[in-house]
Length: 403
Image 1 (cartoon, rainbow, N blue to C red):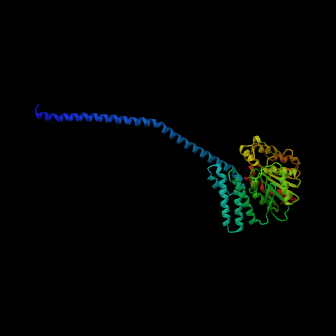
Image 2: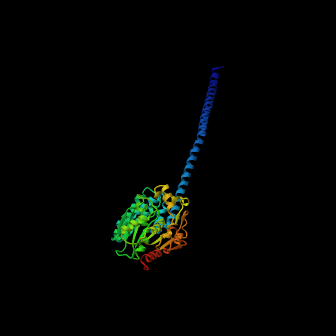
Image 3: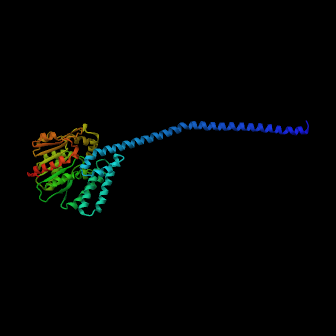
């Protein structure tokens, strides 16, 4: 082959070699890329179930939390609805009540929210322009602090003490002659004229306190009576240091001694109705008694769980609560109530395990019964239908003179 031919053939050979080399390299690179891509795909396939499981777990957790939050908010709304009549009957402004309860995310928020409302009224009392306005604002604070204790929370003891303090400060401004009277297992305020036609003791119930029934006290005061609104064992300001007792007449007897009066009328509300009737049967200085939503008998096994829980807290233990409930039975005591007796019940007040006051009125020698068909427990939804009547009846029964 000529030099020219060799020279011409060389580029073709070189081109073929380069092409072959390029092809081999490309082929090798493609294979490597494919292998890498396959490894990545296999790894992704391996990770996908784990990522999916993690995402599903996160979604399930979020859904469970949302459901729990929704359930807690509903429980808070249900609790607020159940307490509406009682809270507004105790004197809370209904619009403020709706604002406070509308922001609750759970029942656990109840106590702190109501405590804050009470403290806001304390703050505003300091800014009022007159002693009268400041005193009225302090009464409002006392009510809010008390209602804060209707759901268990860590600050309940402090709230009860704040209610007691706010009431005392209010009376110092509004009624300087009001007198704190306290003794073994009782504390309260004696209000009214120096020479009253008679004296009435107002007894609260299981988880109520003297700050809850200020409207009843005002109605009695307006009829010329002196009123001692008290907290007793397991109640109000004494709830943290004492426990409920079924022989409440012993406490009332000590209170009568401290008041220095020869005779009294007793008005009891809710469980306080039992206390009032038990006292009327055993304390001869009781000249008249009235019960409002008071139980004739309790059956521990039939009581709703929330009621048993409250009673357990106020009694100190479940065993003590059961023993207390067994003693709340007026069957044998009712015939011994020789003083005039009025029992008041709401027709809508139906609590399993609680017999209302009608049998008590039937067994007491001078008992009469008032039923308010649309009334609920404590008849906060029907105050005009019983409160003036009770105040008038007590006045007449105690003094012999119409109100």
